[in-house]
Image (tube, rainbow over all chains, first blue to last red):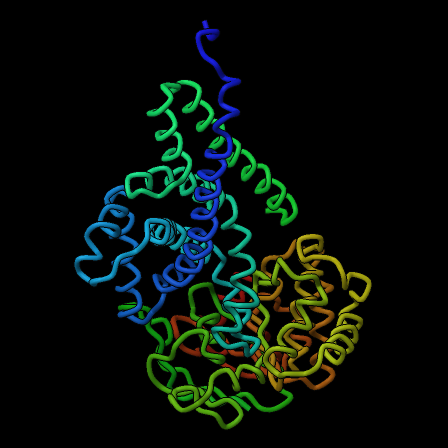
Amino acid sequence: MLDRFNFSGVVEFLPQLMTGLYYTLLISVVGLLIGFVLGAIFGLGRISRIKIIYWISSVYIEVLRGTPVLVQAIWIFYALPLIIYYNFDSVTAGIIVIALNSGAYIAEIVRGAVVSIEKGQMEAGRSLGLNHRQTMRHIIWPQAFKRMIPPLGNQFIISIKDTSLLSVILVPELIFQGRLIAANHFNAVEIYTTVAVFYLAITLTLSFVLSIVERRLDV
Amino acid sequence: MITVENLHKSFGKLEVLKGIDAKIEQKEVVCVIGPSGSGKSTFLRCLNLLEEITSGDVVVDGASLNDPKTNINEVRKEVGMVFQQFNLFPHKSVIENVMLAPQKARGISKDEAQDRAQKLLEKVGLSEKADMYPNQLSGGQQQRVAIARALAMEPKVMLFDEPTSALDPELVGEVLAVMKQLAYEGMTMVVVTHEMGFAKEVGDRVLFMDEGIIMEEGNPEQIFTNPESERTKEFLNKIL
C-alpha cells in the first residue's frame, strides 16, 4: 500500500527540513532557558509574603496559562507591535511566546516543588542563624530542584511541540518548512510523516537525557 | 541568659501560651515537662522566634526578641536548636550538614569548618559516618548529627524540642548520653522532654507546664517527689 509513496525522495528536501529543525531547536532551547528563569522568578514570587509580588506573579501565571499558545503567538506578533510601535521578527516573537508561556507553567512547577519541602528544613536552617535567602539557596532550592526535574521534562516536551504553532506567525521552523515543501511538490504523506518523525526524535532524545539526569540526581 | 516576661502566644483565636514568666541562668539545665498540648514546644520555639511572639517579651543574652530592631539571625547564631524530627539536610552528607552554617552564617573558612565538624562528630561518636548521608543513619545517629550541627555554631544556649520522642526506644539512650555530656560541660540547656529520668538526673530545674502556663517549677527532687499542685501530681502519676 505504501509503494504509492516515494519516501526516498524526501532526501532531496532534507536540507530545507534541517533549516526548519534548526529554528525549532533554537526557539525551544532559548525559549525554555528564558522560560526557566521566568518560572523561577514568578514561582518564588507566588510564595512571596510581599503582596504586590504575589499579585504580579499570580496575574502573569493565570493570564498565560489561561489563554491558548496560538492566541499568544498571534497577539504578540500582530497586535503588540501596533501598541508599542515596534516590530519583532518572527523568530524573536516565537522565542518570546515560548519563554512567556513555558515560564508560567514552570512557575507552578517551581512553586509546587519549593512548598513540597518539609517546613522543618526551613526551620532548621533559620535556627542555625542562616537568613531566609541563605536557607533558600543552600537548603530549600537544591532539594526542590531535584523534585522539579520530572515535571520540568514534561513541560519541555510540551513546549517543544508548541513551537509548531509558531508557523502561523511565519517562523521558518519544521512544520512551516514541511508545508512549503508539500504545497510545491504534492508529497504530503512523505513530508509530514518525516516532520512528525523529526519531532519524535527530538522529544525521545530529551526523554532519554532526562532519564539519565534523574538517575544521576537520584530523584 | 534568657528572660521570659509575660509571654503570650496565640494561633488565630487559640491562645496557646497564657502569660509565661521564666528565667534561664547561664550553665543551667532546665527541663520543661507537661502533657501534650500544654504549650511546651511553642514556648521553646518562642525562645528563638521560630514562633512569633503575640505579646510579652523574650530577652536572650540582652537582645529583646520583641524589638523590631533586633537582628534575629544574630540571636539565632547563639541559640542552637535540636528538633524532634532531626531535620537534617538530606541532600548533604553528615559532615556537610555540620559544616554549612558556620561557613555561611559565621563566615569561617572551609578548612576551619571541617576541623570543627570533625571534632564535633567525634564528640557525638560519629566520626566514621562523616561521609554518609542522613538517610543512611539510624534515628539516634541522625539526632546526634543534629546536635553536632547545632553545636558547630558554638551557641551559648541549646534548645531541645523533644529530642528523643521520634526515636525507637533502644536508640534513646545514645542521644541522652550526648546531652548529658553537654550538660556536664556546662552548656546552658532548655529541654522539652518526656524523659523523666533525664530531667531528674541532669536537670537543675524543672518547669511543669499545663494549659499554657507554668503550673509549677522547682528542682527535680522537689517536683518529682513532692509536687505542690494537683495537676502536677496527676500528670506524674500517669507518666511514672
